[in-house]
Image 1 (spheres, rainbow, N blue to C red):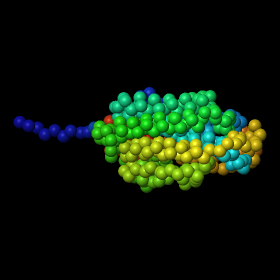
Image 2: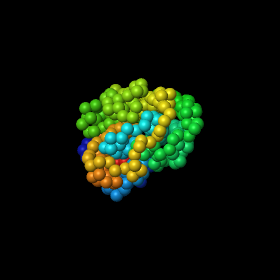
Image 3: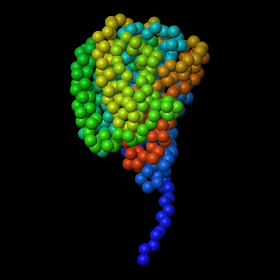
Image 4: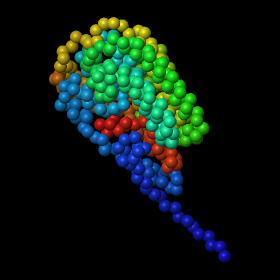
Length: 370
């Protein structure tokens, strides 16, 4: 005799993090799952909160730069640039052209270094060990150049309100040209290794999709937005430094899935190398600092300045009361805003895909928590 039994399903809560090797930092996700499917996800942040914005109010402008180094600690130069640009705009400073080109070259190299780390760790998320070896080999070459220029591998404290701290080494051009050849070979090698790998495609294609309209409404920017097909890039939309003199393309995706978010970053590395080559050819001789007091005192006022960081649109709202310290600094961090899309991307996906989706957003918790 057979008896039909009605089985009830029970929604289960799965805690992932905050100490977890796949959360890319001290980040916690509470997954609500039905079988193998994710029904909902609750992100928990704040484990790395240091009060960076409040600390800025007690530091001189030259000291605030060191706090910005520690926000997105994989994009130090890009962070330093935005706070310097905000103070310079408030003061009406004209930064010397040579300093602008130096800043641009270092920021684009920092973009490549950041994307290389993403490439390596995203490969690890998919279960591939080899890509991270390739990525760190080339990343170390870039970090060595950064050390030669600023004296530090990370936390450079090299940009200044009005220019840069020191001129670049005498062999800077030769080193950059050699480095560009090595990095291009490395990126091409990495591209061949992972991009169209059958297993990698099955783990990333049509996983964690988001459409352009939803991404825009959630405040998503950078490669995550461009992966949905929106060609928005601050370097093109509101050019700063000398980007308006350079030719480069804006890579976009068409599905807004994990693979598109990965491949947009791969293509961005090629474009960054193209930008650096042009900047190196155009870089003039001359001063590296504007005529400005060592202790900057921007006039009373407020403004918003933003730039295209490796993770998206990084903005600074600066309020000055005319003193040597900012009255208020408010940061618009791309990682924090991109994280808003996590719920949308993860719903109805498999638990096994949660790591891939989180990794594809490429968050840095120092910037999320501040």
